[in-house]
Image (cartoon, rainbow, N blue to C red; front, side, top):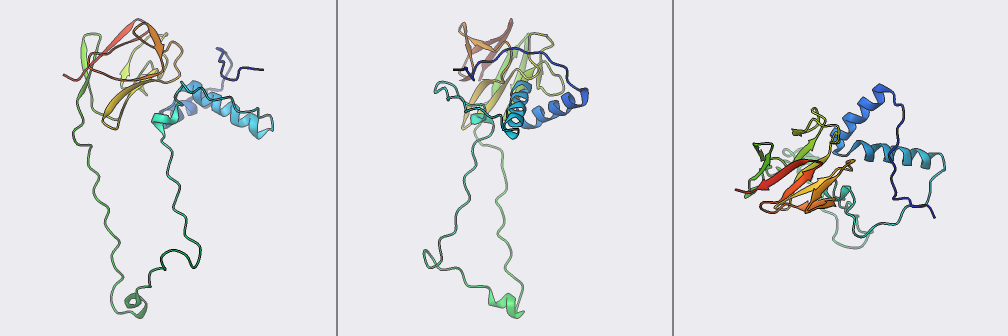
Length: 208
């Protein structure tokens, strides 16, 4: 049986305008070029009736969308007729012309998350404050918050994210990955003093 999770480095010719378009999509969608191209190829194969059985999920691997795009809740379904609470009566004042319709309820103002701990990244003798939900690290200067100009670093190599009061670092399907304590990892919650390596580059995090 073919291992559908196995990946092999390929090279191919690509029209410049398509590559530029996909770069925009990776920036807007927050995913890697490898992920986007694989998805495009998979959808095209499926549209031509060449789809294969979906590969089995690895319970130890967190899917890419687990952080980037949490599943949306299904819209509430209306109860069948005759069941549940009766529908509200229409506003007779508006129908008879006796006054204005009631104003729409105002949405509560959106506020920045309260109590977020400050996180600092120490890199190459510089100290960076991470004060946004998504802090991208990679080689592409137009799509990253921290740019490392090295051919061994992917265009969008990894991302630091804030979720539910914690910070996480996650690999964006980069070629050379993230190393922590001598092992390659895909994602990890960032603790005080954690040190990660992108190739030979050290990333150290502190909350102080």
